[in-house]
Length: 566
Image (cartoon, rainbow, N blue to C red; front, side, top):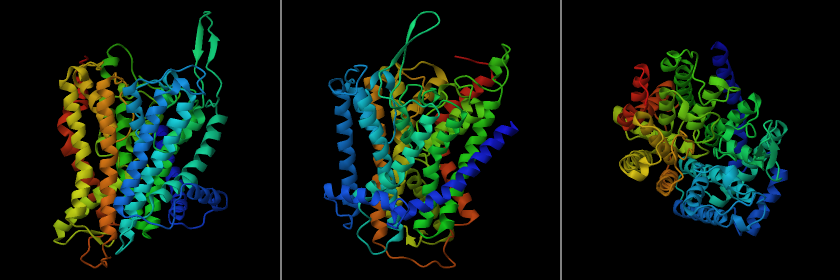
C-alpha cells in the first residue's frame, strides 16, 4: 500500500512540474507570442487562413463567436453522421464493414463532435479504418480545440476592458490544433507505436489457436487515434475494451504515459490561465482547489478498492477488488486512471467501472455530476470551475456586503444567471433523463442488473453524457434507439449549455471597465478562497445528487456490508 501511495504522489508531482512550463508555452501560443514551433507551424497556419478566407486580425463579438462555433460543430455532426452511413461504399474498409445503423450513427456523431466519445458500439467490428481516421480521429482534434477556444474567449472577457470583441474563433481553433495538439499527438503516437500499440492499415489477422480453431485478431490505425484520444480529453477507443485492450495499452509504462497524457494539457491550461491574466497566483489558487478535489477522490477510491469484499471473503477470496481489472495494472494504476478520467472528461477506461466497489463508483459519479471541473475537459473544465468561482465570489460578496468582483471585473446579475444556468441545467437533465429511463420499458430493457446497481448504471450513463465524459459502467445495453437518442440529446445539451453561457459572460465582461483592488475586496488567491471554492463545489454537488446517490451507490455499499447480492 505504501508503494502505491508513493507512486500516485510521485506521479502527480512530476505531472505538475511538467504542466507549469507547458502552461507557459500555451499562453505564448494563445497570446500570439513567438514560440519554438513558430518557424515550422506559422507558414502552415497562414496558408490555412488564406485558403479559408480568414482574416486573423478581424475579431468577433460574442454572438458571432458563438454562431461560428455552433455552425462548425453542426457541420461536423452532419459530416460524421453521413460518413458512417456510407462507409460500406468507401475505401479503407478491408473488413467490408456495412453502413452504421442510423441511430447509432447519430449518437456517435454527436458524441465525438461534443468531445464525449460515448461508444454504444464495438469499434473493431463496426467502424471502417476510414471512419476511424477521417471521422473519429479528426473530431478528437477539433472537439478538443473548440473547448480551448471557448476558454480563451472567456479569459479575454476578464482581461479586456471596454471592448465589444472576444477574439476570433477560427484563429483560436487553428492555433490550438497546430501548435498544441498536433505536435504532442505525433510524439505520443510514435512512443505508443514503439511500445506495441498497433498502427497499420492491413486487414484483420486470422490466427489458429492451439485447439485448431481460427481466431480473428483485429488490428488497425490505433496508435494515432490513441494519442489524441488521451491528450484531447476524448477517450473513444479503437477497440471495445478501450485501454484495457493490450493493443491500445500494452504494458505498465504505456498505462502511466496514457494517464499522464490525460491530465497533462488540462493541468497546463490552468497555469496558462494564470500566465495570460498576468496573475500566476490566481492560476495556482484554482489549481490547488482542483488538486485537493482530485486527491480526495483518489484517496476514497483507492481505499475502497483496496478493502476486502466481504461477500467474496465468505467464499475464501481475500484481498482488494481485482474484478474487472487488468492484473498488469492492479488496484493502484486502475484508480490512478479511473479518478482522473471521470474528472477530466476523458471516457477512456483501463478497467471496467461496472466492477468497482460502490464507493468508488460514487466518486466517479460525483466527479461527473459536478460538471467535471477537476481540471476537466480541454477548456470546458476550467470554464466550469470559473462558473464555480463566480458563484463563490457572489457568496463572498454577500458575506462582506460588497458587490462581487473577480479579476477586477464586477460580477452582476447577468453573469450570475449565466453561470447558474450552466451549472444547474446539466445536473437537472441528468436527473430528468435518469427518471425517464427507469420508468419506461425501453429504458429498463437494457438493464443487466437490478436494484441499486441497476440505478447506478443508468445514472452513470446520463451523468457521462451530460458531462461529456463518455465512459460507462459497461453493464447497460445502450445501443438501442431509446438510449442512442436520449444520450445523444444529453451530450448535445451538456456541451453547449456550458459553452454558450461562457461566451455570453465573456461578451458582458469584455464591455466592462476594470475595478481597482482595495482593502475591501475579497482576495481570490489565498488559502481562504481555495477552501471556499472547494466547499462550494462539494456542497452544490451534494445538495443536487445526494438523494439519487443514496439510492444507488450508497445503498449498494450498505448491501455489501450486509452480505446481500442481487
